[in-house]
Amino acid sequence: MKDLIQLLRQWLMKFWVPLTIVIVMLGTAISLTVVLLHKQQVTVQIPNLTLRKQKGVQSAPVSVLKKGEHLQILKKSEGWYQIRREDESTGWVAGWLLHRQKPLKTVTPLSETTIVLDPGHGGSDVGSLSTNNKYEKTYTLQLAKRVAKQLRQRGARVIMTRNTDKLVYLAKIPKVAEDNHADMFISFHFDSSPEPNSATGYTSYYYHKNNGSYDLASNINAELSLPLVNKGVEYGDFLVIRDNSVPAVLLENGYMNSKDDFKSIKSKSYQDKIAKAIPVGIQNYLSNQTTTAQ
Image 1 (spheres, rainbow, N blue to C red):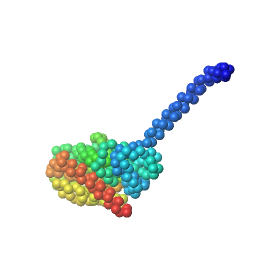
Image 2 (tube, rainbow, N blue to C red):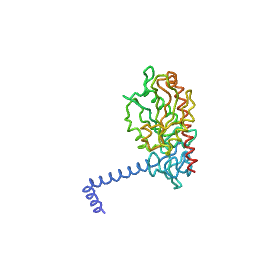
Image 3 (cartoon, one colour):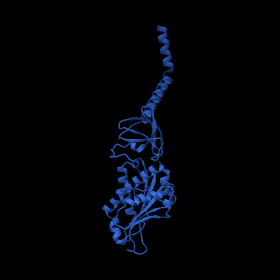
Image 4 (spheres, helix red, strand yellow):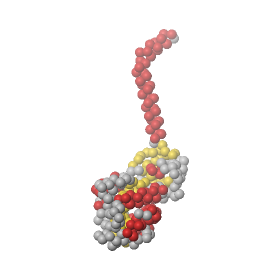
């Protein structure tokens, strides 16, 4: 027995360095596995999230997730997570809603939508001028931020082409929607007429009619009850909507070089009316799309 113990001691003294390395590596591998497995787990923070058959708000719903459910993430794609529930059933859910902690009054298709907002112009591209030399770029950014706030309050995933006064090259703007696999794109502008104070009103433009752009423009325009002339929905050959494969609209929300229009454009109440109307228009568009699909 003493010989065995002595032999074991000699063996440990001879091989303690490689043995220590093996133990450390094994411990690291186990710890890393535990961390990775934990990262693939998520707990539902808000109730009534829709579980869909495939990724995307247009996919068929299969169930509703409850607050507190523990899920395993199988795959992430385009902002959506493929998950497995404790009963082994699987489906897709909007990833940004899984991580949302602030409660939603109601989870709607709008909550599951990715929307790109484009505040027109920016940086050295100032856009149109008011009669007192105010820049269009200032008010498009103000308005887009108000719209973004309203959409995010309803759960939507919002991506801005710019958040500050910077130049975004025109050709790159449509790519923001396509690269982020957005469900829609909205560009904000304020118009200008050849002669000051010679025009008034707001117009909703589309370019593509068969990809949802016309329907989106129509639904948004129908909700814009503003203190200016509603010039309706029009075809517009603008690059940011022409070169966009997702449903895309461009909103001209009044004339910068009209004194009366500009009073509205710069006012918080006017911008808030637009910001509150747009989510309703989008929700109506999504509801119509779902009805048509059925």
